[in-house]
Amino acid sequence: MVSLASLWLPILVSAIVVHLASFIVWMVLPHHRSDWAKLPDEDAFADAVNQQNPAAPGQYAVPHAANPSDWKDEKLLEKMRRGPVALLVLKPVGQTGMGKNLALHFVHCLVIATLAAYIGALTLAAGTDFARVFQVIGVAAILGWAGCIPVNANWFGHSWSSTIKSIIDGVAYGLLTGAIFGWLWP
Image (cartoon, rainbow, N blue to C red; front, side, top):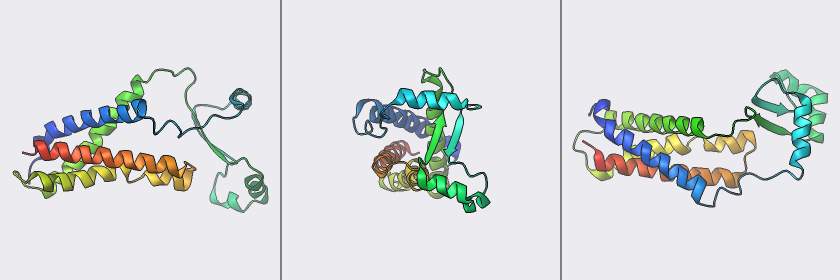
């Protein structure tokens, strides 16, 4: 076994590389540009949401079921049949900068790299060859980056095409992480 502290360099380097790769995936490559569609009349939609005067930024469901027993209510079921059925995320008004989001994303990169390193530290000895480190750390990082993504399509209505693209991104991030750890393994 190796200590987690001895893996600080591959943790940091992989977090930086994945953060940069994520930037390229989302800002340069075109494959995610079709993930979100424009409403036919987004101004009318925004006006309708503003008329509701939502209490705060947050997550909203239409129609809303506050507890499991609500799913037996015929009025709620009729609303579900009639539609629209929607999950809506409202962000703070006026939030235009991406600095906070980028910082939080980098922390996320560090967390996944650290958890993958932890698994490696528990299972791999110092001097383990590149291929074995790549395999163990790569799989751990793939699980971190891609493991939960299908939940978004299954439960929250994200398109399967968007979901599959994000899983592929997660696999790429995991492979990058595994390769960096394999290269820098003590």
